[in-house]
Amino acid sequence: MNTWIAIGLTVLGCYAVKLAGLLVPAHVIERPLVRRLAALLPVALLAALTAQQTFAQGHALVLDARAAGLGAAAVALVLRAPFLVVVAAAVVVTAGVRALGG
Amino acid sequence: MADGVAKPDAAVVRDALGVGVAVGLSGFAFGVTSAGSGLGLLQTCVLSLLVFTGASQFALVGALAAGGSPYTAAAGAFFLGVRNAFYGLRLSQLLALPRAVRPLAAQWVIDETTAVTLAQPTRRAARIGFTVTGLTLYVLWNLTTLLGALGAKAIGDTRAWGLDAAGPAVFLALLAPMLRSATERAVAGLAVLLGLGLLPVLPAGVPVLAAALAAPVALFVSGRKAMEKDAEERR
Image (tube, rainbow over the protein chains, first blue to last red):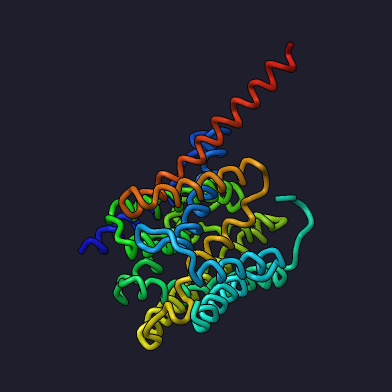
């Protein structure tokens, strides 16, 4: 049930902001400060999420195979690999390190 | 949008298909991750059908898997989705959509459709780019979500296959092109510190929301620096 509450709220919220962008007159949200904040908000959230989903195990911080996988993804990004290759690199390296007992 | 020089429709379609297919296929990773996080087949598919913005979807299932409350999980997903409002703002100017079409088009206002649309030289090309990218991505993302969720059951332990690394890799791939200036990098660094530092002490899901504060903090600091510089120059 809790999961459905989360899904319902996310569906409504995410659709509302998409629609707002298309419907709201430009001058309402096109203020320099609001624009800057909107550009920086995803940077903060994505960085925190990347770090947490790589190093978190419940409430503890751990260093495991995922870190190697993320390193591989970072290398792929530096080499300008396509999106799918970046994700695949992370998955394959993580699986490989785990198979080796990491 | 640099106006003027027309671009052949076929070239626009090719660009749009390239992005749509590549990203659309990664729905498989979402399907597997979501099923691995304990969500049911219907729940996983509803997310891709109705939320349809990848980062928010990954964030939601990640937060739920970590034991976050439905409200903090949804809040994290929502804040990630806020950027789409600003995409919509740009797109509504470029595409000049009739009002009746907007509620439908809104569902496709995401990172990839915006990137393709903004890159087009004319309104016609922008409309073709938006439609082809949106349609390709929507169909493939939902199809591969379903396959991923079904496949997760067949696969069994998704961790043994390294599939728990797909989520963070997706976030990193979305984040990397945003790290253009020192401000962005400072925000990212501070957010990582807050997100990891608060993890042991706050309830699941909350540290990510707290890390979002890195954005206004950096804006405040860079704003003050700009003011000091201004004052010095006036002296």
